[in-house]
Length: 150
Image 1 (cartoon, rainbow, N blue to C red):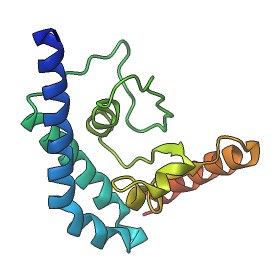
Image 2: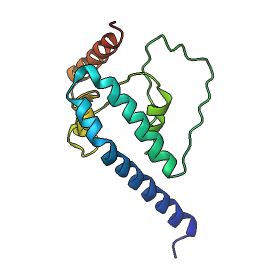
Image 3: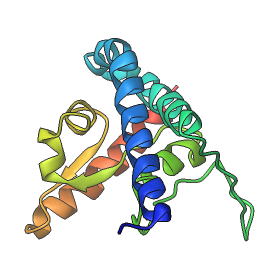
């Protein structure tokens, strides 16, 4: 017999995944529109934050962040979550309140939900290639540089 706790945990995971899918498809037309205008990628980030908040909230998940040291929001950071949960991406979208790019495995350019982001604002990396990693960090630097041009 399957314990009730395991059944509820699975049901909550499915609720969250349905919520993510629902809000993705609801926001998709706007995300798609901004994906064709590199000068407007910042709006893709804003929509991604809205998407993260709404999909988490519908599943009853609310985030609280605490800091050991205050964050200087005028500086550039590389944030590397341990990625032990499906919630890591949503948490990062809500934590980082400015424009950002995710780096991820090259296969994400083919994912249903990740394709649009990893072909535009995010940075795919071929994990078998040191040159690809180098290019990814150069692209991240370029993306940050363009964010600060008046």
